[in-house]
Length: 108
Image (cartoon, rainbow, N blue to C red; front, side):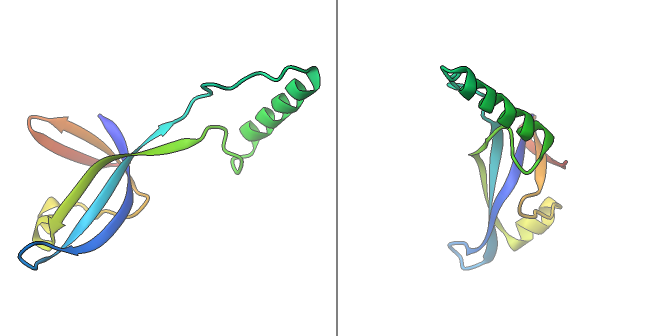
């Protein structure tokens, strides 16, 4: 099971000229503090610690950076999209479960 976010929805036509949708789903992963080096001086270390504390207290300063990894591209005609029974919205997050040769989307 993994989580995806709807990154983009575009209107398309298939090879027969039928209207459809191209839905781009990306997996979001948090980048850890890999490769973060501790500053050599005590003053620089103190500044880094203060900035870290501010990031934890204020959500406008994200502590960890997220990267979007392309995961699923759906090309669906209008009738296929309707029969899927899901209304995809940009930035909506879904849990995806792959079982028994099927895909299940659950809105988070």
